[in-house]
Amino acid sequence: MNSTVKQSKALVGSSSKADRISQMKGYWSRHWMLYVMLLPPVAFFFVFNYMPMVNILIAFSPNNVVLPVLETGWVGFANFETAFSNHIFMGAIRNTIMFSVLDLVVGFPAPIILALLLNELKFERFKKITQTITYMPHFLSWVIMGGMAVSLFSTNSGAVNNLIVGMGGEAIPFIETPVYWTITNVLMSMWRSVGWNTIIYLAAITNISPEYYEAAEMDGASRLRKMWHITLPGIRPVIVTLLVLTMGGILNADLSRFIAMDNAFVRTVSEVIPTFVYRWGLQSMQFSLAGAIGIFQSVIGMTLLLFSNWLVKKLGGNGFW
Amino acid sequence: MSKKRKKHYTKATTPGDIVIVILMVILALLCILPVLNVLANALSSPEAIMRREVTIFPVELQTQAFASIIGDSRFMFSLGWTALITVIVVILNLVMTVLAAYPLTYNSLKGRKIISFYMIFTMLFGAGLIPTFMLFRDLGLLNNPLVLILPGMLGVFNMILMRNFFLGIPESLKESAEIDGAGPMTILWKIYIPLSLPSFATIGLFVAVGRWNGFQDALFFLTAAPDWHPIQMLLYNITQNATQVDVASPGGVSVQQWGAAIRNAAIVVAMVPILCVYPFIQKYFVKGATLGAVKG
Image (tube, rainbow over all chains, first blue to last red):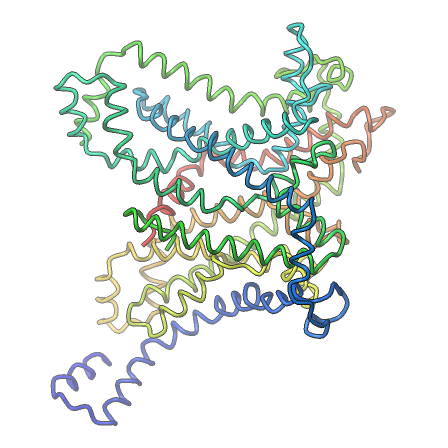
């Protein structure tokens, strides 16, 4: 109804004040409901994402957990200086980067290889079952992973050590010394994600035109050559996109993972930036110090994310938005 | 296409195929055996665990560890409580996600770009843990069970997913309904929602798994309200210190000795709900994981 009014006015070509008002009325009568719908989400983001930003000021204030943040005073960047002269925090930065790099080196190629293998599986039903089983670990929480780590790898009664001892070897402290714990942690993280991360590659593989394979078969190409020269180049854009986005998250660490797998013997490597913020901020009430670190991480994280998103688009892929 | 595929699969089986099958069987075993190990530990006698006899089969079968977990009222209450908040969060989240995503599919909506940016910016920059903690303190959310529900009502990522699902619905459906005089609410209710039920399942399941597996919020904000701890938080306390398990030890044996069996029984009980429903709902997750990658 309204649109017909609008159209007839447009046809006449008049743009008097009254017409513009009636156009506005038309717009609002069709769109007011949409704004009403947006109210709860907008309010939600305001409360849970924008309101905390006022409290960022704590990072520039003397540590005072009682006064409201606007009344505590101003210390400039002193809290940042304290943070960066704290050797535990510097260790946490080092550990965060170390785990990101290890995850990248070990965990990034694994799903690509697995996707290539799954794609080569001939037996549809078997393939489905394999996929269902390998996706499963993704749904286990890190707390459960932590419990599993103990029953699999503890020196006293872990299943793997039981096998090693049973074969006459000596038990290995898989989760009790920093170096072994690091390896165990990275491998368990890979175990948890490898199957799930094949999904995106498998989806990309199905988009490769079968004609390439047929042409290659006519030329007598072997299976490995087809994988190397057709499948892999076919999913290269996806690989590049994910690689760039993963590298953009180099300063991110999943707190649950490092809290749940943690134990007292390995703190030198298990302390990452979020666990440091949690322990020093919430447990030791060093709000200002932890708040400063939070800002540092948010700013670096945003920069890296924007940069990697820009790079992905530059390389011709789909960014985050 | 399907014909070609068929041809592909009826080709003779080569040694290469066998090698791949063997590799996949090994991989599948690697995924299953750790779970079996946890189950075996939960069902074996503490003495057998100490004697290093347990790998994937129970040794000296006992069910007391399970009995003491199932008989523990705190653990069972936490299971029910977690199930309840999971259902609540899923419903609230779906409603909020639709409310956020649907209006943004209208190109004619004035301010659409600004509102999108307002929402997506929260993905880019977060205030961090301490400012959030201070806000929750001021809002009275600390040690308040609502803290497990309210902050999880909406996520930007799901909003983008849902918007992309909606954008996949032909615009012409919307236009012809508008010509018939239907308002946004009617169009949403009569066209978009019925066509988006699979995407609701996908997003709802992501949210459900996240809530079921989550414990960070309890760790940060419910330190003084252990009664409201979700199951993973309880499990975290149990796995962190198996000797301080709150559950009653089965008749006459020390908790210390039973730690491993009880811990593993607790893990199994917390794992079961997900493992039971997972194979049936897997396809929805897969759909979500692939759609998340192709954002507009």
